[in-house]
Structures are given as structure tokens and as C-alpha cells.
Image (cartoon, rainbow, N blue to C red; front, side, top):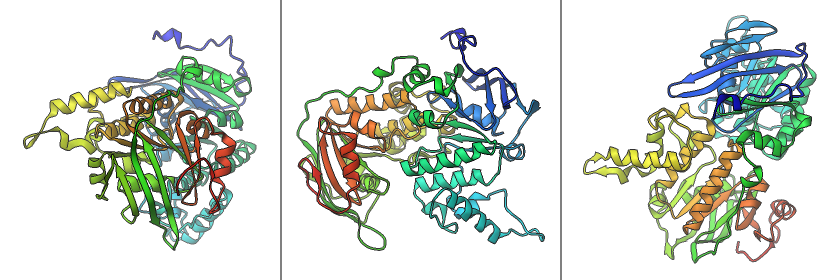
Length: 529
């Protein structure tokens, strides 16, 4: 697309012209990676005491621009002004000293350290004798977690926390820096609705103290709740700048993807086939007693997209982990194509036809030191041997086809996985799953941290697989996604199935009501469990 078609028409923008409230200004920023222009002459103003929203599809350049502002990487050209003076942050620590902090999209934490050690990593509070003031650090960490309304033990190992709690720790770490400008890159991607409300209260408090917030999110509805100004990037260009009160979700989507938002989410009607998967009385014990999965039973038909909805901790992720062989302490029966599945490990379940797209792609879906190609082949590598040697030509054909089919934005499949945006990394995880040729695809929050355009592509993949007779188990915390894409929806609460609804029956009210049920009688249509 010609460059001039991307440039915003400043005459039509209603952005305020005053410079008095601009604390940070990125001017004419260009960033070039080998084979890729990530940012092309982008300018972005940050206003103090405001939430400055930055949105765009995956690969649009949002995270690259933020990493430049936070000192993670330098621009190829352009300049950054802080309070009108040019700055050159060469590291996140240097940016923090200038008053710029960042909550990264992919958690920047150490799972082998405690919560408190993560919060103060490289910024430890020290005593007069130079030793770490552990009591003071723990007290401050407790204060920050209390502000975020979380009962997380500061001494607990970070790796033992669920991903939503780790996200809270990342936020607490940023708040501990006392910065003037706080960059939040997808801060709510793993948070529950109640946790998002708490974060928004914290953001409003920061605004009242004059802190400038740069906020990136793919959850467009929440941007209208919290945002003051909206800037949109597409393909490395700035395409729109507007006051948030003058916008709506359809306007944002159209600017982001360049097409009508009504065409993005379409569910295809299909004739369902025979029962493909049958789960009978699946149980998984919970530490401390009781069940994380309490006698779960359900069927999945050929060509069906079966949605699972529930609150945090309802057992949805435990369920797909059990089906994928990632949880060994289980009981019950699993039948696939009328054959009892006896293997319990991950490799055996992949061979049987199960493939899991995990919620946490960084910890469980990718190897950060490998290339895009090598990550994509990890689960199906044994299919590409020619005698004792790997058939590199077949590998290249398979990965290049997945890159094309999934619209993965990468100059070369041999590039490191870390060179890709979060959304494109998620597509690589999906591609890795598809190369195993699964019969049942288990999607655990597949759209976490993905823009509306990429979500549309993921949903198209789901539709295509279902139309070919595959079974798709789809977990999402987003009510609208579950309602839009599922042929049938099962609701879970406290390890049990508490509701079942066809696509025609399901409403937001019914799903929310069923998700609030404890261990009482089930509601909805016919189901077992």
C-alpha cells in the first residue's frame, strides 16, 4: 500500500493543538529490522495525567515503538523528546531513571525467584551497610499487592502462580518504580473481570497524580472505558489520532484492519457428524482435598466447535490439560473414535490425535532460543525424517505453507521466534499444533493478546477445521467470542459442568448465571456430569 494512503489527515483530526500537556514526544520514528520495516516515520505524543491508547493489529509496530521508548532497542532514525529535551534511553534501567516504566506484553519475570524478589529485581532496596533490606521490600510488596486487591504471598515462588497472578506481579513491579510515564502493553490479557476493575481504579489514581499512561490492548471495549486519546497504527504507519470520546469500536476496527468489522466474525453452519470424543467421569484431585475436575462427562461431535466458559479457577484449563496428557493424576475414561485412550502422557495423546494450544504460549508453547521454523516443527518432528536424517526440504515446505495459511508476518521462517509480535507468535503455536494433524484441537484462550484481525483468522481456522470433520474444544473468557463461534457451549464452575446450551439457546445472561453456580443442580439443556 502506498505510504501516502496511511498518513493521517491532520485537518480532520480533533486532537488538541496545545503542547503544554505533552510530556513525551516520539518524532518521525523509523525502525528497520532485517527484511522488515517495523515503523515508518511514526510520531506519537504522550499527554501527562491521561491514558494515551495505542492500538493496531499484531505486527503493526505498537510493541516496537514502546520498546524504543522504554530503552529496550534504539530507533533506526527519529528522536524522542522528554519535557522538550531529546533523550536517548539505552536500556530499560536508564529509561526508568528518566521516569519511563513498562509492563511488557510477555511477562518479564523470573519464575525461579519469589514474588518480592521479582518486584524489586535490579532495583533492590538496600540498607546503609549495602545489604538488601528484605523486610522493607516485603512490606512495600505487600502494600502494592494490597492496592491491587490480591492476597498473594510475597514469599511465594513466582513459577507457582497462575498466569493471571503473574500478570498482577508484573503490574506491581511497574508500580514500585514510581515513574512519570507508565507503558502498559496488554496489561489485562490474563486478568479476570474483577481484576481489570481493580487495575482501572489504580490507573485513575495514577492519572490524578499526573502520571501519563500509554495503554495497549486488543480489548477494544475496555479502551473506551479507560482511554483519553487514541492513536492507531497499521503496517508500521500511523493512520489515526483521535480523542477517545469521539470514537467507537467499529471506527477503531475499521482503522486497524482497513475493512468492515461486520465481516470479521462469522460462524459457519455445519452438519455435525458422529460422536468423535467421549469423556466419562473425568476427575482430577486438588491439592488439599476435593477435585479440580469433579466427574466431568461430555461428548464432542465431528465438525463441532464446543465452547467452554467459566470464571477463573472453574477448571477449564485443567480439563484441556488432562485431555492433552499434561496432568497425570486423573481418573475416568476418554474415548476417541470409539477407541479407549490408554496413553496418559503428552506424546501419546499427540499420537492419538489430541493437540493443545496452551493459554501461556511463552512457558508452554514456544522455545525462545529457537527459530520460527524450529518452533513450528517441535511437536511433529518425527514426521520429517528421511532415514536417520531430517528431510529439510519437507520441513521447509511444511513451515512455509503454515506461514502462508496463517498469515504469519515473518520475513523468513529461520528468524528467531522473539523477532515476532505476540500475536504472530501465537499463530506459530497454532501452526505447530496443526502440523501434528490432530483429530481434536484443544484451544485454551487462543485469542489472548491477539488483535481483532488475527482473531478473525484464528476463528477462520476453527471453522475450516470443523468443516473438515475435526473436533474443536474452545476455551475463552470472552463471552462474545464463545457465543459467536460455538456450536454448543458448556459452562463450568468449581470443577463441574453447570450448564449446557446450543448456539441458539445461549445468551450472556444464561452463561453468567451458570458460571456462578457452585455445586448445586445443573441448568440448561441435557448434559452429563
